[in-house]
Image 1 (tube, rainbow, N blue to C red):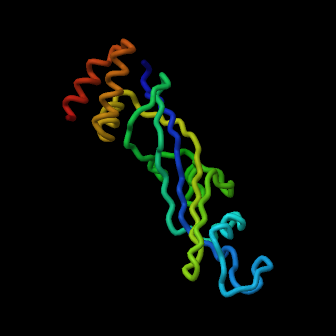
Image 2: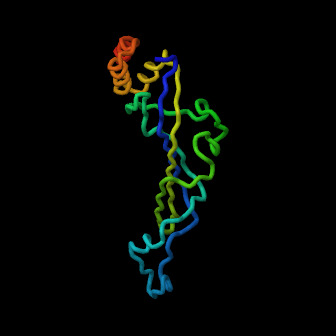
Image 3: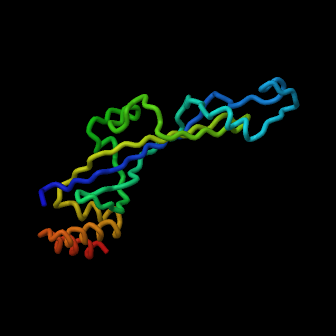
Length: 174
């Protein structure tokens, strides 16, 4: 056990915004049909949902999965503070985690008629997270009992010298 705890984090960025694209058009002349506003669910599927996001209304970053050095997953409810904890952070547009201008890994488009088009994008990346080992249990306890207890158990099973101290800190927190 070194002086630094190393974790791998699967990070998700979720953006919710709008598009000026109104989706498939309906009514007279759409797709060679003549009618009074005729459409069906297939029109959305045929359109393909390729509306681009013109304006971002909300953006959030969360850690979806934590992986310890021994490849075990950890249930930690920790957030990464981009402004103070990410190397390379410049501003909201360049957060140091996600490539600027990259295509989303997942996309959802909802055409809502007169209210405009809602667009959601999801981006995924991995990050290496380091913290001093002497603060590891207090950091993990602040994220919830379950994850901290699992870390203490993992240390005991690996025969690490600080396992007893880890359990003591978890029990003091509980």
